[in-house]
Image (cartoon, rainbow, N blue to C red; front, side):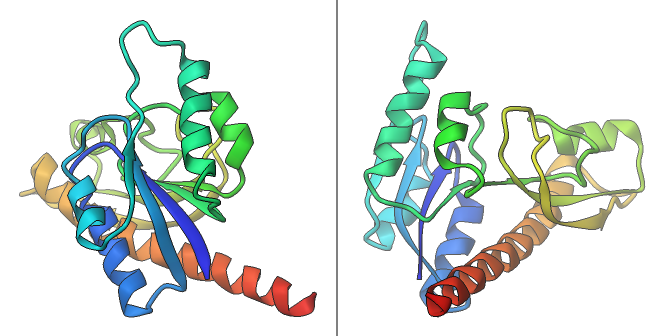
Length: 195
């Protein structure tokens, strides 16, 4: 079973959905810790499941690489097979990416490479597009530029607000993340059996 550390910055709605999937056996993974860069309300979801949590804040004037090294050490202490950024709203320093990639995933509320960055849903509505999407990628040193593992289109309705569109995209993000983690778990299991 894959050992997963999830990093969040907010309410953790995608985290909660992932925890439910793991608990039901729908995804062959166990979340061994949930971390954040702020005292995120979503950490409560992990605590409800008895999962350890931690906060590694990025302080004003902090050196990005020093913070990335501290965060990497905290994550590594849980010996994860996979690290998932789920609504983690900070660009990962190279020192962190090098330590965990390619087993470092991020969900993104757009059909990449369309609408990268922190305001993807707002940008899609502002652009007047009729569809956007959701993606799961391997994190690299860029802003949402890593290899795409899965993605799906989501229609933009005339009545959509940023919030309503984002909620529909989140549902697709959750499905895609579950599919990707299932695939990784199956590959890892097959590799173990071969050895």
